[in-house]
Image (cartoon, rainbow, N blue to C red):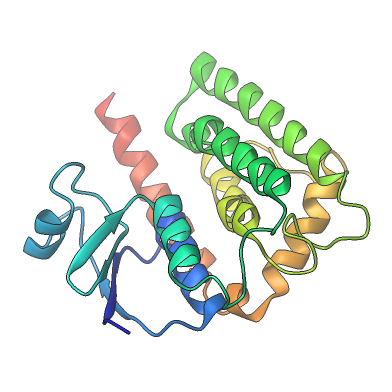
Length: 224
């Protein structure tokens, strides 16, 4: 197997998606922490000259960018090690549908901590609608613990940021979004997801994230 390297940032849910995928499949890799606010490494600029962003997976000198594209690459490269997609074509299509939905709509949740006033109210409303839609979908799982069935699948990985980062966003923004009584199915999924060792052992420190995100919000508000 060609050497695998991952360029990421410790607090990024997009980096974590790739880490979770590699850990679940048992793929060894070297991790390179990028210092994006100060100086992007020459390797990052070389491997992702278009967006100059993390994460970037490099295998055998060939780079792959964008977190869910990387996760899909990992699945296709090592399909028999902890499969992320069901064998049924319809179920695979449905997983991709929901991944696309969250990729398009999910940024509204992040914007709650990046805005104030009427703009924040707008993004909070959008975020609650997104969470409600996903909670309704989670309600169809029945006795299954994950969107992928009995094991974590690609959609679970895509939605992973809800399970850990949303609480930090709430604290930073001073609003409530993901309340257990409002989204019972999604909340139950969150608890199951965070108990899987490959996930639990690879979640960034919540307190450190809170300090970092609060500092970022203060700088943002000061510049307005």
